[in-house]
Image (cartoon, rainbow, N blue to C red):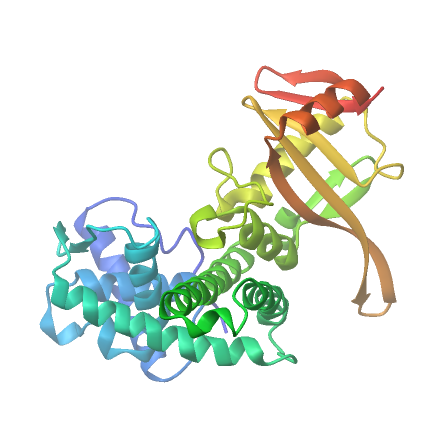
Length: 331
């Protein structure tokens, strides 16, 4: 089965010719969706967005198509959780941004609660065929276990603590669903070569695990509420993270100051922020070769701790790569 490329799904201009082209794609995806055929995440996004924007009643709405369930979830999640459930809340409707009324807000939050309960059951399964879901569910179960320790059953006998626990639990569960859809989208939208980074004579691989681990632990601080971690606030958006890291690491590698066979981490400064990148040797199955070793990007986060920064500056030498980029090599 052939799928529409990222370029084909992009609206180039508002000409009549372009509207005819995108309308044909819309009709095709709608028909395939009704037949129950598989659509990529970007195709679902395209179809459901146009269903939301169309002025033709006969086209239907996203709520009329089960294939738009994840689209609806993403919109609700971003509406209410982008600012940690702190209102007022706004939605885009027919080209206008309007404040969400209390009645609609109550309905939306109830929908998110239903989604959370259903997704929790998915996370409890330990043998998913879907590799992304398998990796994500393992990560989220760790988070939920840590939450249970923070709110033991005895403490949850008090209503306020029970409410706090339930809210934090729903945050973790809904964030994991959002990360799942994000990861699927990223892995579908790019070629394998985009996730392979040549460095120090070897290849560093940015895998679905890399994206899951990094976004789950080092983004959305108000969701995680974990002071032991540091969080990304600028420079690196999850969707382009693998591309950004590839550009940076390729530039660093030109200086030939880091031998990846002698270290499992790289420390660099980008636009004034210190970052730590960790790499692990892992094993994977390759057809015709059985198990092979590879370098997986394990974690990536900013460093803010002053003691850690002093330690780095004492043990490493700073080397300028470009006006925006410096890298540390061991002294």
